[in-house]
Amino acid sequence: MLKCNGERLWASLMAMAEVGATARGGSCRLALSDEDKAGRELFSAWCRAAGLSLSVDAIGNLFARRPGSDPEAAPVMIGSHLDTQPEGGRFDGVYGVLAGLEVVRRLNDLGIRTRKPLEIAVWTNEEGARFTPAMFGSAVFTGTLALEQALAIRDADGVSVAAELQRTGYAGQRPLGGKVDAYFEAHIEQGPILEDNARSIGVVSGGQAIRWLDVTVEGMAAHAGTTPMQLRKDALYGAARMIQVVEQLAADFAPEGLTTVGELSIAKSSRNTIPGVVRFTVDLRHHRDEAIEAMERSVGLQLQALAQPRGLKVTVERHWVSPATPFDADCVAAVQQAVDGLGYSQQSIVSGAGHDAILLARYCPTAMVFIPCVGGLSHNEAEDVLPDDARQGVDVLLNAVLARAGQIEPGEA
Image (cartoon, helix red, strand yellow):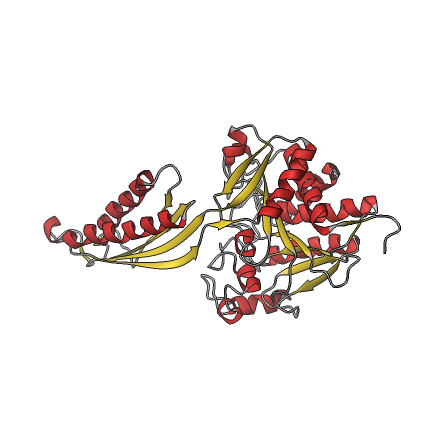
């Protein structure tokens, strides 16, 4: 079994972490920002030095290609993202991109040619921190989201995706989509399971279902000092009770059901005015589609039941849906065979977070490799991994990718 150059991998991770570095040790490279562009340019320079050719499609997805001996073969793709949360960590996404680069570098070191081409993909806006929905780069690539719709999306300042692609020079000409033999993505777990179980590798069987809901609670704004409590239509007090119900819903669907209210806003808020309109988001997750369907249905019914006696109007709208997604059995087996051959501690695991791999899995054979993150912490400047875990994850990725792409023996054409 082959092994990567762990020191080179770690040095690359630390160098990329300096692009958009934050005061508390994290990284901030919002999608299509100057920092995101700088990160892409550093990666591109490393790819050129490794002999890779670069291309960019119309939604800004960046691809670095190593040719194979078979010019007709579809590429084996490795990828993730370089954009981060506003106060993000140094490994979320970037680990998968630089893991792909280390795979190519190590094959170059060893003079190994593959039958199928290899491509490293950097997907645009995986995080969804600046532009929503998340993962629209891979969504456009796979045909899940129309290009025109994605280009029209605007950030909180009203700046469009189309404008930022032009400004940063990432409105590319490569045709969207195309044949992909298989897709592999290495990623930090972003949770505590591997660390708690003292496992170095997660062999990911698939991704759980995710639903994002937008909730609007409408009451009546009124004077805080002159309106009796029994006559109020207080949207915030109503929303507070609704949020408690959303929290309880997770217990009703335990242990796999997860609920989160991540955003809450009071329209035209004032210290001495009863809130008239409140908006909040709901994030629902479960391993099974039928369970998350029931969770969404319960949210709608229970919130309506709370609104009525308070004289409130509540509207629940779907913002984004990602079904439960099993990964390809052959690709998962390639990962499993690699980790077994290397003798690393491992376990099967379901991805709790959304990843570009979830969208790719509906487009081509796909698998993921997870490594632990310290304390299960992610989307935080303190996010961290152990160098040995980072190295072992790439060792697994290297062997799984090579098995899929096919090694050309000396003397073969």
